[in-house]
Amino acid sequence: MMNQPTDPMDKNDFPGAEGEGNGPDSAAQAADAAFAASEDEIGKLRSDLEDASDRVLRAQAELENYRKRARRDLENERKYAALPLLQDLLPVVDDLERAIEAAEKTPQAAGLLDGVKLVAQGLSGALARHDCKKIEALDEPFDPAFHEAISQQPVPDKPPGTVVLVAKEGYVLHDRVVRPAQVIVSKSPEES
Image (cartoon, rainbow, N blue to C red; front, side):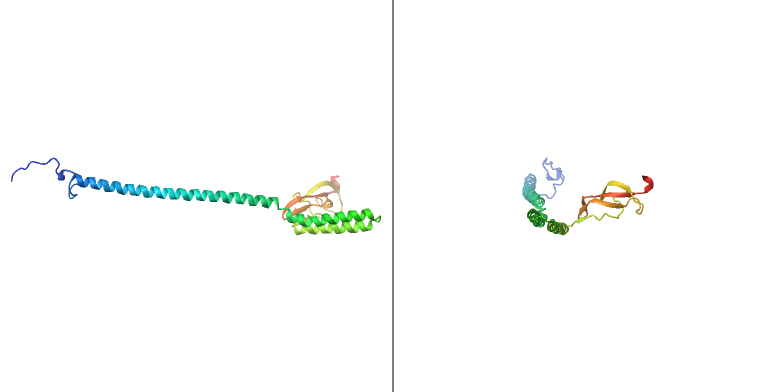
């Protein structure tokens, strides 16, 4: 066997070059194919990114529209919240005006008293229909959450801290105090 001169570009001299084809041309083709595949993948990723960006923008616009609509609805709720109460109170106001007119024309006060009692009943009914109720305070233990003490007085037959007189009625709306009852509270005779 004779020694053959070695070719500097022998394909067996490059790692991974065995069985790859025709040398530099096949490597360039493989690189071109890989580059084309990565460009296709980059194009697909760009398209996916644009779709995602579009969905995000649409979602943000929908959220902003929802916020505006909710804000507008809330403002309308607040603005017209007293409407049912006013609708119930206006007939009572009318009754008061009629009672005043009748009292001006009639010298007797008995008719006026009856009219005012009817008006007071109408007003109490209107408040009750809207869950606005009087605070029951008389003979109850003093509760600062519902009562405002304006005075104390010794009352021998009542335990100390009991409401003995209601000077001004208090009201609650559902479970919230609208106005506390102004009361006089008993104290022991020794505290005088």
